[in-house]
Image (cartoon, rainbow, N blue to C red; front, side, top):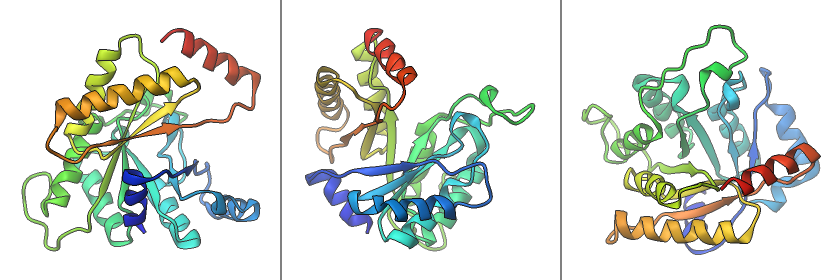
Length: 244
C-alpha cells in the first residue's frame, strides 16, 4: 500500500484528500460520508489532521487506521509537536507502526494559545525536525536515545510542510532544505493559487535538494489545493498572494 504511494510520489502524480476528524468520539460518520459521495474513487489516499488550530478533535492516528481499513488506501497521518513530548511521540509511532500507519506528516503545530481548551499549554520540546529525527532513528532500528528497539519497525515515510508564499525566497529555501536534511521525502505546500508561485516553489525545492544532499534521494514537492467556496476565503487568498 505505502510502496505504491511512494512510487507515485517519486515517478507519477497522485492526489490525497485531507480529512479533519471532528469534535466527537465518532469518526465513522466522516467515513460514511466519503463512501456515500464515492470520494475514495477519485483519490490515491487520504490525510488526517492533528487538532488543527489547537482545537480538540478526534485522534489523527486512529482516524488514519479507520480510513485505511475501510478504503484500503494509504493515509498520511499528521503528528504535531505542540501536544507531545519525545516519549509520547515515540510511543504513538510504535503503536501506529504495527497497524501499518507509516506515512507521517511532521508539524510543529499551531500555538496552544489558539486552543478552545482553558489554560492549555504547548509542549513544544522541539520543532517538526525533532519528529523527523525520531522517524529517522526508528528507521535505523533504534529509539531517539539511541537504544536498539526489540523489533525493527516497518519503514516510516516522513513528510513536512512549507509555506506557499514568502517575502524572502532564500528563507523559504532554507526551511525546505532543513526539512529535507532531517529526512522528509515529501514537502507539502500550503495551498497554491497561481502558476508563478508554483514555479518558484519547484525551483526552491530543486535548489534545496542540490544544496542539502546532492548524492542522496531527492525530496518531492506536493502542492496543496484548497477549493475556494466562500468570498471570505477568496479575500484571504488575495491578501496572502499580494503580500508575498
